[in-house]
Image (cartoon, rainbow, N blue to C red; front, side, top):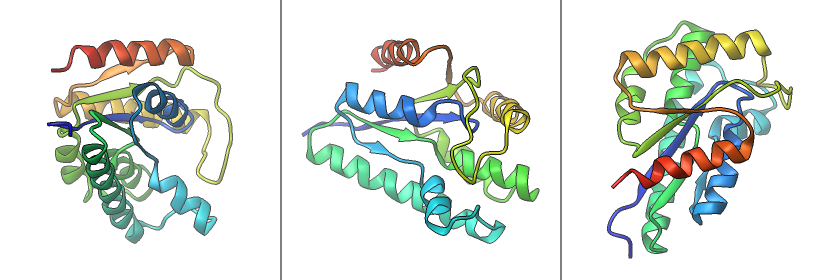
Length: 178
């Protein structure tokens, strides 16, 4: 059994390659992947969440992370790969509902990841569902996310470019974590 399971967090604006990168990293690491619950929520309900539903989405994302950590421990895994984090839902609450209530806990939770990777919005924007708002919103959200990470001293590494370059960059960063 692994002595310690560490979480790799992928954060970024919509259509910045988080899910594709998470899938590839989980495959390369042989690690469980925690998918974005917000996407599942929207797909299942065929709508975006309302303000009062945001906290439940955060709780469910955290619950799924805990389950993945427990599974990795049982399977002697070293990593889990989180395709987004509660910080993204908290910032969405700020952007769409002018509600900052989820932000303090999400920022504190973000400190628990062994590595946070910020995906750059340097790939083509593609509408793939009901929660896609366009390039202008993506860029504005990216700036807010980057500012939030920096303002709160949340260590992160930015990755951009083609998928395989992103994968190799993240894997190199993981090698520096003890």
